[in-house]
Length: 164
Image (cartoon, rainbow, N blue to C red; front, top):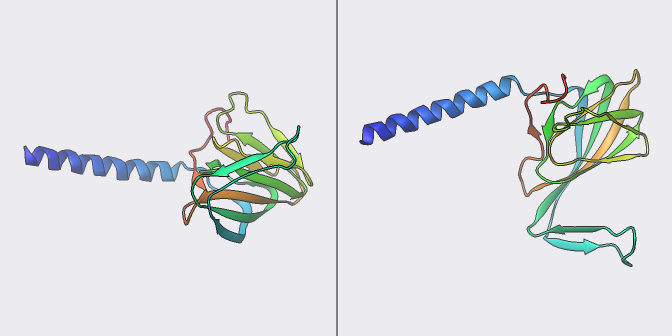
């Protein structure tokens, strides 16, 4: 009985390792994008809202401490972040040029074109940013993440609805 459990455990471990290796080979990696972490800080739990409350009401709550990561991305013409997700919300401001965002789970693969001075909020279900222009572009992202944890998770490519 014990050897069957050991064999099953070993088979499971091999499956996990092979599955990880396969997903690593088909993961969507960044291309033509240089990321730079500008700052990372840990915040205590919080609950905030706009004051005075009104039509433009904003609320945010972290029930446990979180890290806030500020990261700049510089894109060459044709650059792409690759398909990825984040564990918590991300607020992206395009600071130069124009970027096109695609949602991983959007069956229509609708492009969301964002120009310098405009922002984009990640859906939390995965996305990709592309510089579909012939000019350089940049963005600055404010990323919430688990304390000390990863703030980017690679997704397989192509996306389920887009052919890139």
